[in-house]
Image 1 (cartoon, rainbow, N blue to C red):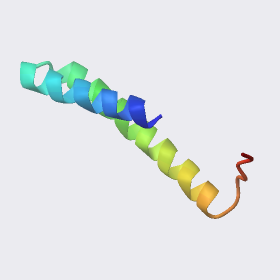
Image 2: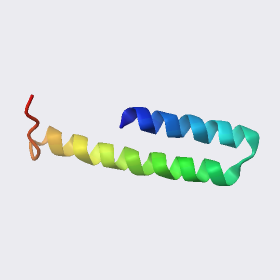
Image 3: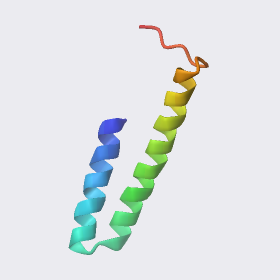
Image 4: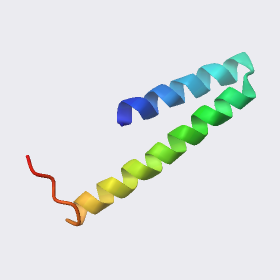
Length: 54
């Protein structure tokens, strides 16, 4: 998931440099959503709500 977030941020940066505002907005929105999901999952694991079996 972190790889996808980084890819979307790079796409947004390149689109911003090229003047593609809509593509930049879509990539940033996707990255924000994935960051939020990753943060929620991390906090649930941190507080032990979700147990990850190894």
